[in-house]
Image 1 (cartoon, rainbow over the protein chains, first blue to last red):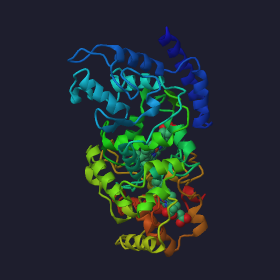
Image 2 (cartoon, rainbow over the protein chains, first blue to last red):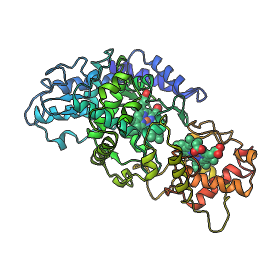
Image 3 (spheres, rainbow over the protein chains, first blue to last red):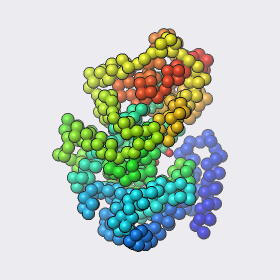
Image 4 (tube, chains in turn orange, green):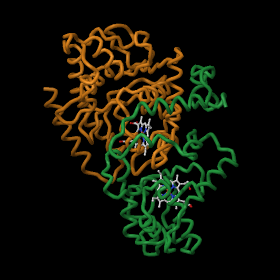
Length: 267
Length: 207
């Protein structure tokens, strides 16, 4: 039923997107959001993620329900608004993806290589991570971002992330800051958020994951980083790597104080 | 140096305090960040790990734009980058603006998702307004509409324009504009063609 209704709205909204090439992409997205008021296709990923969380899987035939995302085993509500954070059991800072890999290996018995075979989905080949992230983040909708820097390793991750944000390299001399440190700029017609200002960081961070209309996929913050590094002409960011944890810590912390508002819908 | 990171922490004072000025100093943090990055990327396609090896300008420019460079350091960057510019042996700096327009439109090149056999574009439109007809342009750089009409095509302007495309930092330390010749993004002929796009009286830039 949900699927049916949604397919129809997506079509209608898609048509709305097509008509006026003149108006700005923002206006188009606003229209699209309106058309989808009844439901964001991200809900399909959320439903799949919730089922995956509860399903007994892996060599140990266990569900993820005992996974501790920081607020105690099995506590999902509000957890994403406090990630990344330091986990004593692993003695390191982890973002959502890293923690999920940890739980899939420790609780379910997957090997890391098997757990991370498909980190980004394409069409019918969906990624478990995108689905799980959709559901887990949806359980933080409306919760105030509150990433702590209490532990020394959390402070270190933040500082490293800040350095990486300004790190220029590659054939184009680009850093994140090249595209994201001035307000009111755009590249071609795409508005570039100023991630060095609180408001910009908050708006950007709290709206990922997002259903991407242009791709017909649910994409996570992890994917956003990966794709910006591609445009930055850097090599490929490893999934759940230290650099991605550090950058995510930097940006998530800078979004503190804003209400988390994803899964969202974007261009 | 130690206070640098703290002073430039862009967010609420709380963040700066919490981030702590007690741990690593600025240089140690940079060093550690580089180590962590080197372990966090996979080579893919043409994008190898050596892309994380910074040259002098990249190192000095890895800072918030609000944090100004000392005058002598900026001058040093410009001098070294100016010295890197290689002007064409045949002395001709203007090619075909029609080719230049294609190069200015194309965002292909150097990404791990790009085929290295296909010549790179420059995507000037990503950052600059150029012609009146192309409304899909970015605003990271200044508008270059009527660039040649306003400045003429003297030898000095031609040299400056070709040189700017070859190595933007020869004239502006830490410019956000890529160094297309210096870093081997564009060929000599391609740089001649975009120079013509900016300067040729027949180019759409100058209508």
